[in-house]
Image (cartoon, rainbow, N blue to C red; front, side, top):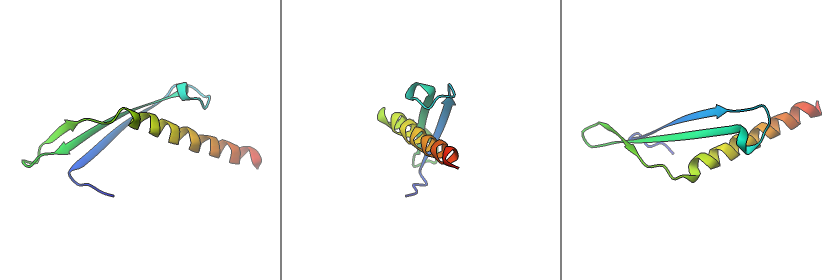
Length: 70
């Protein structure tokens, strides 16, 4: 779903080579456009970053498992 009046920025930090929760950090920023067309910072639920971290780790583990099976 696209929302042209909303935009996100993600900063993803890889802190180590192990695929653990403390090896990655995600900062999520959100802005919404007001009626005048200006972008204003908006709140992001705290669990959003953690959910993205989990999704990244799950996919990274899948890729690692695929590469070791070949």
